[in-house]
Amino acid sequence: MKLAPRTMVLLIAAICVLPFVASTLAYKFWRPDSTINYGELIEARRLPALSLTTPDGGKFDTSSLRGRWVLVQVDEAACDDACRYKLYAMRQVRAAVGKDMTRIERLWLMPAAGQPDAELLHTVSGTLVAQAGPGELRQWFAQAPDLRAHIWLVDPLGNVMMRYPAHPDGKAMIRDIERLLKYSRAG
Image (tube, rainbow, N blue to C red; front, side, top):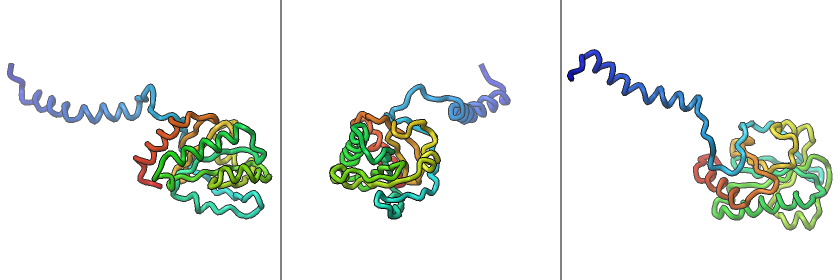
C-alpha cells in the first residue's frame, strides 16, 4: 500500500509534534502517585527579613545562614523531651552527611525570650540559637498551624521548602538530605 505524499507529510509532522504535545500535557496535568522523598515538600516560600536576636539579647547575624541548607526547629527555651529529640536528630543528620556537613546549618528558633539550659546548649554545640517574635515566625512558617510539630528545611536561596515530622526517621531524613546535596548546585 502506497501512501499519498500529503498523508506522508502529515504523518511525519505528527510523529515530530506528538512527543512535545504529550510532554506538555504530562507536565501540566499529571502528578505522580508517590515520591521518593521522606520529608513533605511544601510550596517554596521566600523567607522575609527577620530581626532575630540571640538569647542574651544581642543581634543575631543571619549571614552565617546564607548559601547553606538550614535545618530549623521552633521550640521554647524550656526544651522538653520532644524538643531535645529534634535537636539530637538535626545534629545526627548533619554529622551523617560526612564531607558535606559544612553545607548544612542547624537553627533553633525560640518564639519568646528565654535562656536555654547551659548543659543542653553544650550538648548541641554548633546549633545556632535565635529568638523571633511569634508574629514573625507566623510569616516565616505560614504553612503549619503548629510550628513545633516539624523540623523545617530551608534551601540555600532562603526558601522554606520541606518539613519533617517532629520524630523523624533519621535514616530516611539522611537519604533525603544526601540526595538534595548531591543534586543541588546552590549551597
